[in-house]
Image 1 (cartoon, rainbow, N blue to C red):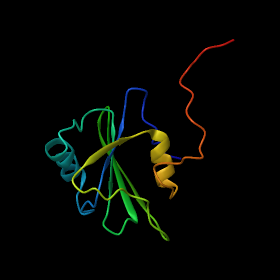
Image 2: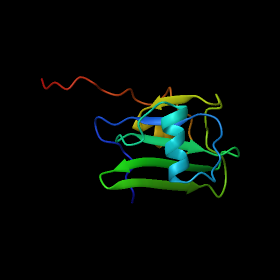
Image 3: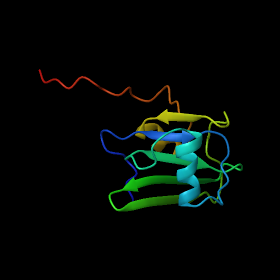
Length: 119
């Protein structure tokens, strides 16, 4: 199974609104660089969704080149944010929720524990 969890220093960015899924790696990398003013060669994940909200592409740089991950739903829709031409930073946990068909905010989920202390 492909692990889309970014490294500790990496972030996950959603390209809100609809993206033309005919875009290939170069087209999506150009959107990241010129429209969102982010670095496509970083270790971050850049996530795009189509107008029907049933297809997602994830672009990320690995040491030797770009990787493009594509998911098409057979039923249902992704709960994708509609604020067009905006980029939104989300956690890897929120990306997992989104890929599972859930909303980005899950108020009943356990909060992340940030304190790392032993008693």
